[in-house]
Every structure is written in structure tokens, then in C-alpha cells.
Amino acid sequence: MVEQLKKGAELFVECLENERVEYIFGLPGEEILPLLNALSSSEKIKFILTRHEQAAAFMADIYGRLTGKAGVCLATLGPGATNLITGVADANLDRSPVVAITGQGSLEKTHKESHQYIDIVSTFKFITKWNRTVTRADFIPEIVWKAFRLAKEEKKGATHIELPENVCEEGTSARPLSGEHIHSTIVADKVAVSSAAQMISRAMSPLILAGNGVVRANASDELVEFAKATNIPIVNTFMGKGVISANDDLSLGTIGLQSKDYLTCGFERADLVISIGYDLVEYSPRFWNPRMDKRIIHIDSTHSETDMHFLTTIDLIGDIKETLKLLASFSKFRSDSAYSTKLKRYIASDLDEHKDDNSYPLKPQKIVYDIRETLDENDILISDVGMHKIWISRLYPAYRPNTVLISNGLASMGIALPGAVAAKLVHPERKIIAACGDGGFLMNLHELETAKRLGLAFIVLVFDDGRYSQVEWNQLNRYGKSFNVEFTNPDFVKLADSFGVNGIRIEKADDLQGVLKEASKSSSIWIIDVPVDTNENRFLSEKLGNTICPV
Image 1 (tube, helix red, strand yellow):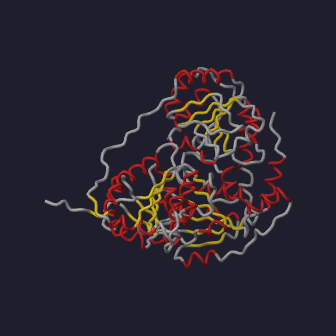
Image 2 (tube, rainbow, N blue to C red):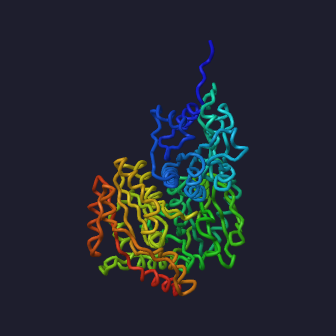
Image 3 (cartoon, rainbow, N blue to C red):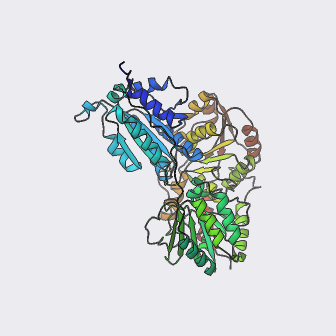
């Protein structure tokens, strides 16, 4: 009996099902029609039709960050594939597991000029951990399995598969690779851990710098237990928000600004920095170790990047959770927390500034405070990139990991709205707010239609100031003047109405919190237009420039 061959596209979908893919975010196109046809018969995978490939990649990025599983995005060849680039690069720098799939014309066309053909594999090589073209249908199981494994292995990131049209149609008897993939846990060397414990015990003012790797490793509990056992305060990066509750006495808050802030005082005083799950891409060490005089213990799944400002004394490489447990068992001392307690009081007084301010346009500090009052501890705030990101990163208290999502490696404008779509699909039970500048909001505005079509409910809060205010902030700080950053906005309320969603413009400062709380209980999408006082950006520059460390 002759074995019935299946098409490459059908096998590809079976392999995706074997990887337990839930959603594929993307757009259709001619060269991926066979793959889409095979997907239409899948009972396990839902194809989420987006309005732009960049947004599809952002959705896969946020899905990967929230679940730890690989988010999947799909585009056709040429312009479809190039439109994915920003979102895929964002995922790769932010260590989010993503598998990007792009179509391609038949292989017989790739050696000559062909309609819409460009070398996508070479283009994606520099923004992914690994990528390949499928040249035969029989190779599909191995390529898919490897792409997903590498995307999810530390450090997580993006991989890419190019699937030519003729391979989709090619017959094959191959099958998905079977069997569970089990990783053995690598534990840091006990001798090195003992040496690290001795170094910590000799330190006068040790400080923990916690990064995104703690979130990825689900090691927040172990981090807090180690900190409490040793009484060492924790500073987190933008992407490490929530690794320790902002209410905890040992939480000093978030660092990430290039200018001097109160947290910089803690680093100036520190004689030992214990970096845990910290990537240099999150925040350059030249800002917290400018004199290159800090002793550094690096705890992570991989060795540290080389940087003259980040020359580590001891690297504890292995599973972060297990390393922290082992280090806590070796650490039989408690650090003096008097200075960190004093520093925390200064920081706390800064965070509550303007929370009761009813001036109009609204102070950004007031907006951030009202968002925090609206969301529960497990609800999710997604920040787009712009000046509001600075205010949110610096001021917004987080109490759980992965409840404040910020693009920080690539720092991509336009991520928040598509990110809210993915977040609501992953956590339909949670309230979601996408905080956008008026610049970033319009970059992926079209995904309102996607969200509406899917029946999702979340809030898009627009910081409305009619300018690229973070660029302006940097221009003023550097040159004392701004250039070509102002623009005009549409009527956001009418715009919301045209998409069939709710829209409101805040006309008084004391209305915002009530509107936010009402909208958060709604079963539909809300666009909240909030005029913001840009003068506070200038005042922030003055404050940071004049920061005096408490003694």
C-alpha cells in the first residue's frame, strides 16, 4: 500500500500544533496561501488577523513575555516580511521568545530577480538568535523544533523560519518530532557561591540590581527571600519592575535614567553590586558605575557581557532560582539598612508629588498616580515609548512581575496598543491599560479594529501634548532648544467613535480617576484623551540635575 503524502504546509501546521501554539498573529499574502489553507483546518491554533505586520510581531512579543512560550507571527514575502522587523528586533533585544514565519517565492526564483523577492534570511540574521530557509518539506520537523527550542532557551529571543511557496506544496511523509523536551537545571558552582557569600559578608554597603532575567526565570520569590535573609536593598531595571513589591521595605524602586536620580546615590555609596538577571541592554553600567570601581557579583543563566564598566569579580552561572537559594544558605549575615531606609523615604516623597494636583493640563505624575489607583496588583499596564515611559518607569509602583510591560532594549514606539491585544488574549480576567503618547498611539492605531473585531476590552490612555516630547526633552537638555517635534492630532473622541469604541477627553484633572475606574469595568474598549502638562518635563530635568544625595 502506497503511503499517502501530505503537503509541506500541512506538516508545518502539525509541527506548530505539536509545539502547542495557541495563536498566530499576522496578515495573509499570496505566497503563504497554502499555509493559511492548512491553518484553516486546525482546531488547536487560532489565526489572529492584524492590520499591520509590525503589530503582529509586537503581539507575539508581548504574548511571549507574558507566557514564557514562543509567540508566533506570520507574514508573506517582501514588504510583509520587512514590516515584521521592528517587532522581531524588539522581542530579541527584550529577550522575549518569538518565532517569526515568513513566506517566500518558489526556490527556483531565488537566484535571479523576481517580483517582491529580497534576501529575507540575510536581513533577519542580525535581529534573531537563529534563522533558516526550509529547502525541503522533509526538513520541516527539525527546523520548527529547533526554532522553538532556541527561542525559549536562555537567553530567550526571536528566531525566524522562511517557508518558500513550492516547499508548502511539496509532498512529504515526514512527521512532527515527538517526545517532551526536558532541560536539566544547571546549578552554580558551590565553591564560587561560597566565595560570593564571603565577599557579600565583607561589604559595607551592598546593593542588588535586579533585571529582566529574574522575571523570565520566575525567580522573584527567591530574590526577595535572599534579600530578606541578608537585608540587602533591591533596585530594579525598567523591565524588572515588580520583581519585588514596591511596598516592601527593601525595594528602592526603578533605575534607568541617564541623569542623576536618588537611586544613583545608592550606587555611589555601594561598594558591592549584586546583579541578578541583569542585561546591559536594559541600562548601561556606565551610568551606575562611572568610575569603574564597583566590585560586581553577576548571577544569571549565562556569562556577562564584556564592558569596562561591568567587569565582574564573580560570575554565578546557572539557574537563577537555584543559585539564589544556595547563596541564601551560605549567607549568614545581615547588612546595615540605615542608609537605604533613609533613601527610600526621599524616593517615596518624590513619588507622591502632585497626586492631588488638579491643575490643567494634567501633571504626568497625577496621571500615573490615577492609573495606579485604578489597577489591582495583578492587572497589567503596558507603556508605549515616549516621555510618559519615563514617568511610568520612575513613578509607577509595581507589586508583581510582568504587570508593567515596557519596551526597553529596542525601545519601540507603537508597541502598547497591539501589546494590549495580546495581553487581553492571555489574561482575559485582568484589567489592561495601554499608556500611549499621542505619537506612538497613531503608529499602530489601526489595531483598534483588530481589538474590536475580537471583542476585547481594555483602556488606551493617550498622553496628549501634540509633540514628540521625549525627543524634545533630550533636545532641550542637550542644546537648550527644540527642533521639528510638534504636530497636530485628530479629535480622538471622534476617532474612537469611527472605530465603534468609546472615547472621552478629560476636561478636568479630578475627572480622570473616576473615568478610568468606570472604563476599567466596561466590556468594551475605551480611548481616554488626557491633555498633559509638558512643563513638568523641564522641571524633571532641573530636579535630576540638582539631586543631592542624603547623608
